[in-house]
Image (cartoon, rainbow, N blue to C red; front, side, top):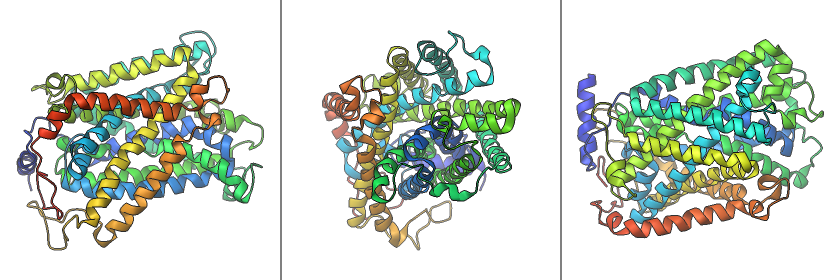
Length: 517
């Protein structure tokens, strides 16, 4: 089928949902994959958070990675099924709204927007962890690059703000430029991951059995507590694979492309991240000198590969940080656009405008960029508060995911979707379906999600207030989530009438292919 025919069919498909085609469909299969992979960005997040996981769980914290990956893959399988049936921008909002109604859908979108804005700031600040190690000239303020020092925190805000300004510009220019940069960056990141794994294997000090070592942090049931805390590292990393769905209206043949790329992006990140953790533990000069728990992967690279080799790979990490920030901002802007298009956000008329020349919603990208830069400023005077913010944003992402998987499980128990062994799209080929395994996989995804929300949000002092200086940081997860939901209630009351009046037929017990509901 020709590109023109596919584009025409995609446009007609979108109109069936009640929306005019306004965004440019210029994203192919690899760019769609790159959107999900770069949000997860294992080079960015594993490099950032390895020390966190190791400090709490020792070498055996490795096992949190496959467990979290398996749980999130259950979520991704459900998302893939939804992406095939509702190929719409702002997918978490759109899916939740169609499964559970306007109110639940609105809160899923609201929570996701807040999480994405904070996550952009969290990704951008990672430049401070990398750039000064590549060249001291990147330390523009003072001499201490530590994020917790005044000079390091200030420099982190400067570097992060510059990056956010650049990613905002790219998003305003258009999705094609974003896709090219993102795809190039992801290709370099994958090459970097392979290079790190291979090179560290040649410098291994110990065998893979190291992952059975708890580092003296306990054994049996006494290790459960440290293990659960160390699992936060993997939970922080393995999110954002739904970004391929966020770009559905800019993807060619999204009903078939998005489900595949959601799963491929998560699978690639899961395998690559697991290998990174394993070879780092095998190649670390020491497991007991304390440096692995404070300096993490950069320490392993520079000590094993030398200053030059380590710096070359750190350059690749810096590129990964940049494309990760770009991907998260793009996803956040599409969520704002999708909700504004329905008229359920402040300044919806302006936020829903698409530049006819670039085919891009520019203002949402600017809003996400300005919001993320404002969050960055917190780090100058309150590094602990910034760390708490970026930790809690992952709780928000898991809550948003749960506002999709829980309603979906309820709908499945009512008969969703129709059996699809004989059903195919007009373009040919069946839609992705879990078939008879749907209820089991969905239930597993819900149980995992609720368990991880509890684990992430539990008010642990060692996570949210390790210095023990502020009581509110200790309970910050509860305070922030509660405050965000309260603010959401106040905002929703303003737009409730509009949200409930949207022309959205009730989702039938058995979904019909292409049903605008």
